[in-house]
Amino acid sequence: MIPYGKHHIDDDDIAAVVAVLKNGWLTQGPVIDSFEAAFASYVDAKYAVAVSNGTAALHLAALAAGVGPGNALITTPITFVASANAAIYAGGRAIFSDIDPTTINMDPSELGATLRANRDTRAIVPVHFGGLPCDMKAIKAAADDAGAVVIEDAAHALGGIYADGTKVGSCTHSLMTTFSFHPVKSITAGEGGVITTNDQAIYRRLLRLRSHGINKANDSFLIPDQAVTDGATNPWYYEMQEVGFNYRITDLQCALAMSQLKKIDRFMARRRDLAKTYDKAFEGMNKCRPAQPFDRDRSGLHLYVMRFDFEAIGMSRAQFMSKLRERDIGSQVHYIPVPAQPYYRALGFDPQDYPASQSFYNEALSIPLYFDLDDDTQQRVISVIKELAA
Ligand SMILES: *Cc1c(COP(=O)(O)O)cnc(C)c1O
Image 1 (spheres, rainbow, N blue to C red):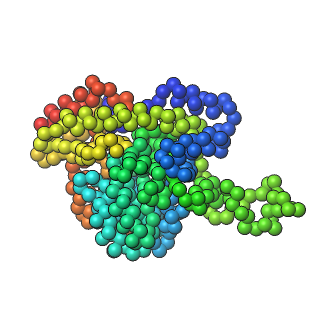
Image 2: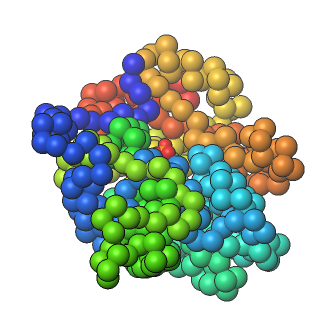
Image 3: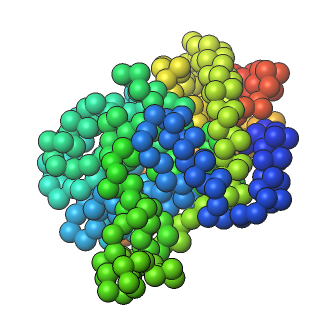
């Protein structure tokens, strides 16, 4: 079976994990710091905080941004549920703003209207869908006008580059950016995530929140009487200054992530080649087309998403997927619009209120895209799709 996405593990990845097993720290050790430094340097951010997964990264980012009771977080309907759930975890409201049908990313002009209708918005969470960077200049301008901050959900976009040439993760247009290292993403840690920022106060808050709310990075003590004897800090002493979580990542996971990060340029080059080959192969098709057929050299290319006119093809999407499966080709729908989920419908959301998202959803199907997809296998995928969607 050819999956829609898959991780790639080399012998040096295995050796990196084994080395950690042989050398001491399993968690809270030095490999986490090295990985954070390497990641921050790769994306050109000042700080990186590694956490247990991308969902934890979004949760902590929402808290650090001040999302909470009495305010709202705006994200896109076309994302994984975690982008919106971050608002709920933090005690705030989740709000959705429709996509631009040409990019499948949050539409900046829609965002203006959504902000006017939700004056209590604290954070905007654009998602670089499929890896294609959002129009961050416009989103940042809208956020600034509304007094809101931007948290980028870059789970799809490691390796992506904005229109101005800066890197996704550099926080050039945001307060924080989050990533995921789930096995289907560009690099993996098994499970893992990271938050990048250039703001030192936010960085320190994220460190506390990641580990129970206990002071880190030499935060000053709130109760000096309890902390100090004869002018020196008590050796056992620590302070929990707010409620945090155990969202730590392990040294084992960071060893894998670090080894994977060294291959990112190779990973990206292959994904770009594969995407361009698909783009070319599907040119001139009438009943299907790539959903985001541009800026391939700037996209993180997590997914290769197509739009199919299933009515014209004469098959339901379910039938089409099972025809692909019969030929050993995996496919997936990214995503069911989040407002269509029962939890969000029960909060009063109606997916029909997001027409661009709904019409994209009706046509969307992601086809195989991953580093190890070889040319022959890709050609087989192409010919089956051309046959089924002729
Ligand atoms: C994968 C993903 C997440 C969640 O990351 P996990 O590491 O699986 O928790 C969040 N947002 C988007 C857009 C994702 O694709």
